[in-house]
Image (cartoon, rainbow, N blue to C red):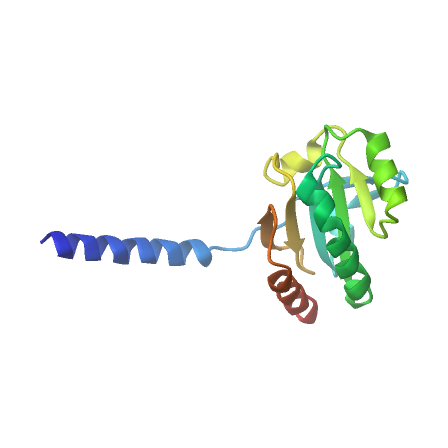
Length: 163
């Protein structure tokens, strides 16, 4: 009887895990990004592109370590419809962000979330780095927290660009 209960539990949990994986994809929230240059960009303006919205901070070691890869991906895929918006967290001083972007020649859009509104809209992001890969239709394809597999990211990105 005990073995049967455990088997039923495993089957039930397996079914639950399958449901979790196949749940409907969530639409990216409608927000306005305020760039370092003062430009305002809305989520809806990004439709038709595959976009990585990356929450980061200059004080985040993993964020800083990932930036060269973000630059590489942006440069490789931008002509295929890929864009990156790096959203500096509310607690990150604007002058630190500007200095970081200028000294490292960051080629993609960097936005300041000085009131934390964008982070809150994306599920109250608190941990950095947290990134969302958004499809051409505005649906969130995948959420990344912390470090992630570069090859898997590129495969997911290439699939999204091809669709």
